[in-house]
Length: 85
Image 1 (tube, rainbow, N blue to C red):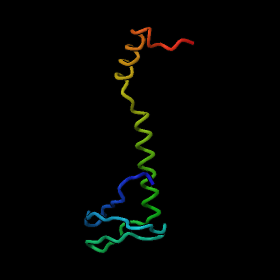
Image 2 (image 1 turned 60 degrees about the vertical axis):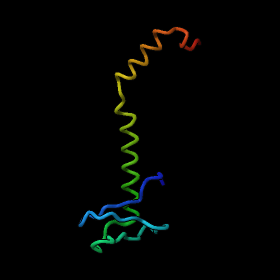
Image 3 (image 1 turned 135 degrees about the horizontal axis):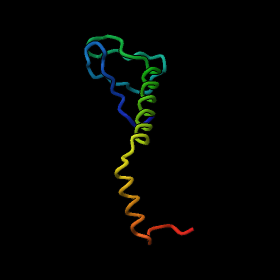
Image 4 (image 1 turned 180 degrees about the horizontal axis):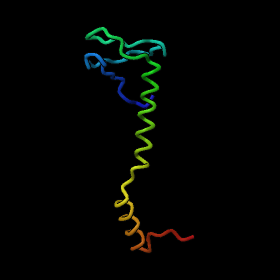
């Protein structure tokens, strides 16, 4: 997947639970503390993919403009660093 943790918090008791092995999409994770159903593996994968997509988008959308401007000024101030066509 994304080399992320497979840790899932129980919505009932907030206990940490983990997927083990290679679960099927229909497998349900059951809390090891309170025995409540937590999430199916398909839902878990969908949520993890969505969080990763949101993280990647935020990384490119929320750029540091001041850092980019400082870099641009440094390049423009040093003509030897410019690429000639």
